Structures are given as C-alpha cells and as structure tokens.
Image 1 (spheres, rainbow, N blue to C red):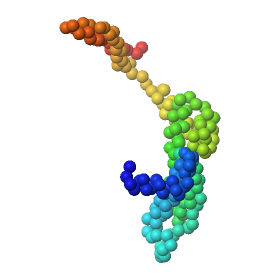
Image 2 (cartoon, rainbow, N blue to C red):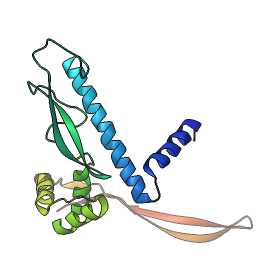
Image 3 (spheres, rainbow, N blue to C red):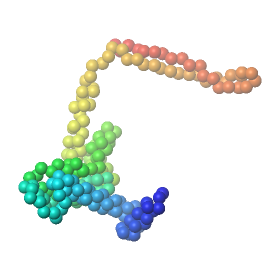
Length: 194
C-alpha cells in the first residue's frame, strides 16, 4: 500500500470516527453521495458551457436542483440533481429516472432463478442493503425475464444432439517394478433424439 493511500485512510478514520464495519459503510455511502453530487455539477457545467456562479448570456441557465433518493449497495442517500431551464441536460453519471445504481436487477433475477419467492427476495434485499424493494418491484423485474425463458423453452429442438459419455476404471499396474495407477477409458458418442 502506498504512503498516499495510508494517509487517505488515516484521514478518513479521523474524519468519520470509524469504530465498526457499519461506520465504514456509512462513510462509503457519504463519500459516494458526495462524489456523485460533484460529478453531476461538473456534467451541468459542461452542458451549459460555464461554471457555477458565472454569468452568461445564454438562454439556457441553471434552474436550481431536484432532490433524488438513490439506492446503492451501501444503502439509500439523497443527491441534489442540478436542473437547467430548458431541461435539455441528460446526465450520464445518474441518468434521468434512474434511482438504483447497485445493479440490484441482476441480483433479484439470480435469487429468483434459485427459487426464492418475491417476498423472500424483498426481505433479503432489505436485510443486505438496508432499503426496501417491494414485492411488486421484484415481480416487475422478473416479469422482464419471463419472455426470454418462454422463448428458450419453446425453441425448436434438433434431431441430433452430440453427447459424449466418458467413464473409467482405475487399476494398479506393476510396470518395471513400479506400481502405477492407470485408467481404462471408454466412451459412448452421439445419441439421437426421438
């Protein structure tokens, strides 16, 4: 670990008075929200072509902020998304109408594939991440996957599928006074589907 990283960690430990794993989680959540806020402000500066508090003769200008609750793997937090008068800004860091940056959809689909109910998934997400995901939201996410599952289940089957079965018997064989383990292999190739 570099000296710079050690100094950064020491500064964080002092700044946030970290005593437990939960304190680390809160510090990371705070750092993430601050970084997102700064990135959104920078995106707005680039979109408008001038920095905050600068004067400009352009017809489009800053128009305050809009509070947004964001879900992350560290929990929920608020960010103030900068607005422009013409609503032409399209943030890339946190796109419009996106409130979840934890890739929770993939996790929900994985839990659903393992046979968990929507209620169990909802409770698990709340236990792990500390924010509520309704059973309806879980259903909406898994419903997106159902057409792909049905398409796969209803795909046409080939008349022949190459399948190879391999089996072996292990023998102890004496070869030039040395005992070696050898395997006798046999296999069965392709089977036709009826």
